[in-house]
Image (tube, one colour):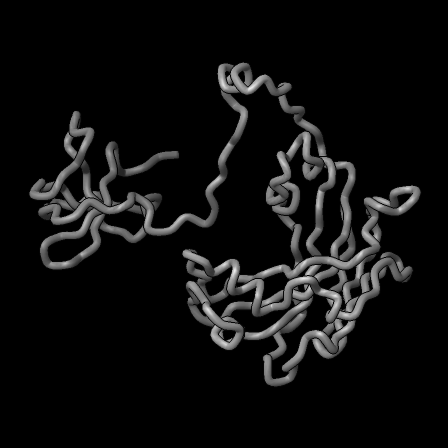
Length: 257
């Protein structure tokens, strides 16, 4: 990728502006009081060279925002050896499963919610989701019981079709969820079966962490997933999965696997 910079520095100037600049060669620890050439632009990938310079008052994280951070574990042979763990496999996705879920949409930034009322006050509304899961990548010997990767491929986690306000759904426990595959009911549950309710989930997730407006929270799936059927009934090419929640709506997707 062609970029404008060699050693990119993001900083605050004495007058409070947030700028990108070019750090001096050989300066491993950029510091305040440096005067550096300034780039024009908002994001590191679309910067343009200018003739301006600015003083560094405070060195900032080089990225203002990152959509996701991946952490790769067990990727050094010395670490694998000292842990005495087997080399992890590299499977493909063959065991695709559905998970019908109630989805909570956060409507305003929320951190350290200390009461159910405070937690629920941050809720914009509710929608329907299918937490599509690749069980190949979810098994403990592959995932280390961290399920995020198994649920994060492009096209996974469809939600919709609308957001219904909390005024219309004051008590999610009265709702009913069903998941159908090609018209066959696979999951069916009253939402009062949730172990942790919406408020409890938000209170937990917001501990020392800001839930930004627009955050979507999948709240869990009831019994009936393909992984525990006998025989296991993984999704196949062309299967139509519908997730229905009363008073909210239906999301329908045709799978290409």
